Length: 65
Image (cartoon, rainbow, N blue to C red; front, side, top):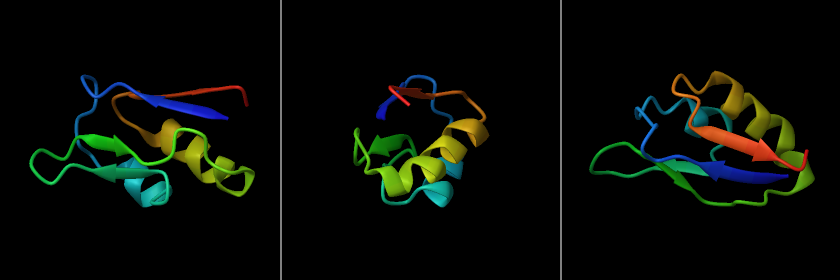
């Protein structure tokens, strides 16, 4: 799985961080998503999928599932 984020779409809701804190974080100054691991291990795929599903701005894209 490869994860990409569109920082321009991110609205800073933080739902991705709650779903997959090992893969996503937020910038302190504006809350925009920070991708910590673009190719997370298999045990995190379900959490990353959930993060993408709940993102209100659809800023997370997954490929190679």
